[in-house]
View 1 (cartoon, rainbow, N blue to C red):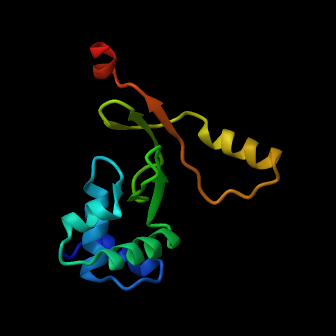
View 2 (view 1 turned 90 degrees about the vertical axis):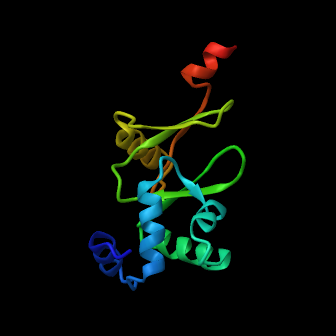
Length: 137
């Protein structure tokens, strides 16, 4: 499915707007939570896993997707075309909720200045129990 929005985004960063890239971007943009390469390959069986990994690497370098690694060590990807946000991850049920953290840019600037570190991107995840799982305990 060709999507002019994704085609333009791909061309803008110097990548060819292929149907496979557009379909992966569409999946990430429509996903409720970040997806692993394996999960993407399950949704796009016509694309082999090696190609998925290469594609995600290219899309991440171009800034169209970003990755997060949670406690399980699995790298997951989400669209960078959404508003900047972070995640609440339930340790019990695995539910993921997007959350906007007020003043996160101030925190990033403070850490970067204090440690003389040039930040390209950042992610922040909060792990704990969601409201439903708290009621079960």
